[in-house]
Image (cartoon, rainbow, N blue to C red; front, side, top):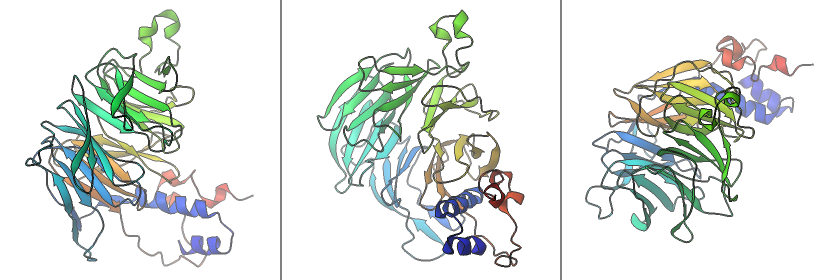
Length: 399
């Protein structure tokens, strides 16, 4: 590290390369933090977590008990061992608490004054963070499995909602009404996700084994129906052959640059797609155990090289390299099935929620000083882990 800092200071190395190298090192050393507890507030399993993107300090959790909790992740005590305290709770005594399981929570992408939640009580609720009062509510005909606001949209304030209905619902925060619907799926929509690259591109996953990409500006709506066989089998059969998985598709996540889309299904497979062409890249991640009837919340790294994906796998979280499919590590600490995880890009930390009612913090291990560092003998991290080999070793840039 000292050698890298000296190269950066002398202008011999790219600052982005140094940042990516350190971010990658930190992700590869993630371990359960035994000195940091997250206050236990839920009586039942935790279905969803979200960290606000402005400061990366406040975290939302939603549970099967209908409760929503706001946590402060900062170490205010300045001691080595501390507990992330719950700042406020939409609990059982709150007049507008969800009646059934909360499936998704999300911060308003541009500030912490607003957050959203959706539930099996068939509602999507918009909350004022400071007063914890209900600002708006949308009612649906069936259970709400998932909802998502665009992380970058400036020209619209649409919330995409996946429900028991095969239609993707679009709710407009400005008008307070459901503006329009996207038709094309044949079963309940289990997961929705806006592109982090384009304002109007939306992905949806359904129990009909299909994943669709939509442009919400177009009257026809659907751009692509993803096909796991890349069209090879569809020539001899009907449109029904265009499926993304051989089972229910219950998880979606774009890569941080929006160029690719990851999907998980109950066929125990995860697939990586080119989000522009809809092509299946055929990356093999092996078996990714998934028997959930609901939406699975998985996440990707930001600012690393290579990029990583963190996937709940029974009572563990498995870390894969996105583009090679290599299994990097398995994070063990929960006592029951993990339903969600969220990445904190500011400090390369990971938080996970499980049916054991606990939120666990996974943080980079403290790096021990290498006695040879700074004397031209520091060893390459490529020798410690193959994920570094092609990513940023100095030999790639020489010559």
